[in-house]
Length: 143
Image (cartoon, rainbow, N blue to C red; front, side, top):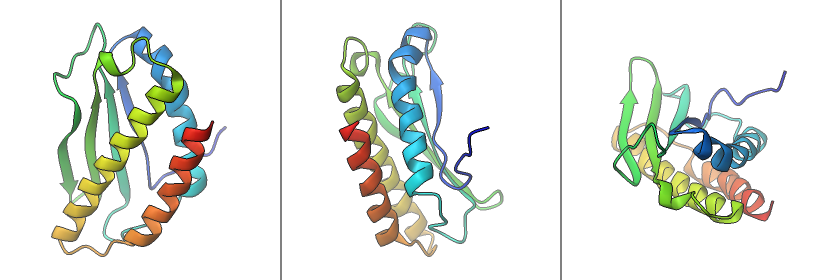
């Protein structure tokens, strides 16, 4: 069984089978890279950083693009945000275009999460997070 990053997760919801076929292979690679480079605690006050990629398709249309619904649960010690990818961003696009879209939007989502954690006066190892994420970004775009 493949090991998974338990601190930094990246869930997804696909709008249809075509969205899954186009986006999932790229997301699987990204999850592996996050496990390889970001499998550490960046904020002691939370147990999980959990962005969720929601990809529009025939059965689900989220009527939004970019990041929304940032939620910080102090009780359950996690932070999450939805990253919405419209059909126009994956349909008839190359893997590189899809990867570029995902990584740019994940980075924006992480920036919003870090900003929220700092607003709550949580200690964030921001320099380490961005150094590690930079490695993920570089390898993700080079594959």
